[in-house]
Structure formats: structure tokens, C-alpha cells
Amino acid sequence: MKIRHLIITAGPTYEPIDPIRVITNRSTGLMGYEIALEAVRRGYHVTLIKGPCGIKPIAGVETIGVESAADMEKAIKKSAKKNSCLIMAAAVSDYKVKAKARKKIKGFSGITLHLVRNKDILASVKKADIGKKIGFALETENLIENARKKLIEKGLDLIVANKSGKKNVPFGSGRKDFVFLERSTAVRYYRKATKKQVASALLDTLKNRVL
Image (cartoon, rainbow, N blue to C red; front, side, top):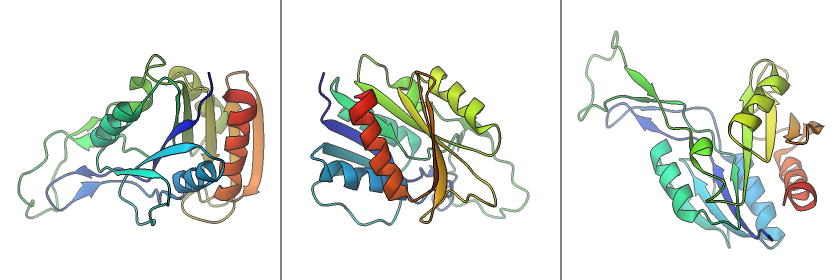
């Protein structure tokens, strides 16, 4: 089966606390955008599903803007096809507030938020609905062990992992350390690579080993 359609997610999600405040994370969306740019250059049809981030639209890319994890899941499932590959580069918020306040919460100091887990999007997208699934993992410890666990538990074909620390700040531009792990137990390291270089290496891997 030839895969020519890539569904790429990028950026953070916003999980509302009230009409003003949100729960989010530090993702800039750059990794997803670099993958989308390289994919279009290589002739793929690309659907980019992006959370709130300020990067300019890419010519030739079908772009769908979303806010919450639930919004992103709906957009992915609507776009999914059996000959598609999902590249989940977005940093989806793990938690959301159980009940969003309808009005701005006054006197914010001392408030207790009741958080519940968001639905696991990667796990919810079944193999019957899409051709391949690629995930990302950001860890602070036990990088390989935690990434491989995610690879297996979520039924991924490949996972791209990196570690957050003083010597490897993962957010935004610059050079970072990355690891590619495949179901075959193959592990490949990319040291001090830009996200553009990682995007190119990822698409090479998909063409030669996964797709």
C-alpha cells in the first residue's frame, strides 16, 4: 500500500479553565511545521492539524486549526484514511479541567482545580482507520525505556524521542539530540540536529523503512 497522504499535528493544545485562562505547554509547533514543509517538498499531500501557535501557514498544505485535545482528535479522525500516515508531533495536554467555569474566576489565589486526563489520541486512532502511526516522546529521564514503552502501548510504527534538560532544551529552534526507535528494536541517534534535519531524516525513514 502506497502512502502519499500525511496527517501531521503541530503545536500545543489549550484546555480552558475559564473563558480567559487555559492549561497548555511550551510547544512552539516548529517540529510539525518542519515535517509538513519537507513533506510538501517531496510531493506528499499534507493535512496539518495545528494547535494554537503563531507560525505562518504553508502554501500547498491543507491546514486545520484546533484548540483543545478533543478538537484535535475529531480533526484527525475526520482526516484519517487507510492509506494515510499520522505523524503526531503535537504536544497534547495530558490533563483538562473537569468542569470549565462559564465566567472568569475571581480571586484566583488559593483555588483548587479538579483535573482529569484527556483521551489518549494516538491510542484511540486504530490501525483499521489509518495506515501508519508515528509518535513523539519528550522525557526527563529513562528516555529509551519510556519511549519504547510508548511505542508498544500505542501501537506505533516509529517514535521520535528526545530528552528535556539543561543541555538539551527541546522547545523552538536550535540544535537538539533526538532518537528514532522502531518496532524492530532499531535505535538511531541524531546529535545536535536541527528540527529541519530531523524532519528530513524522519521522512527518509518513512520512505525506506516504514512506509
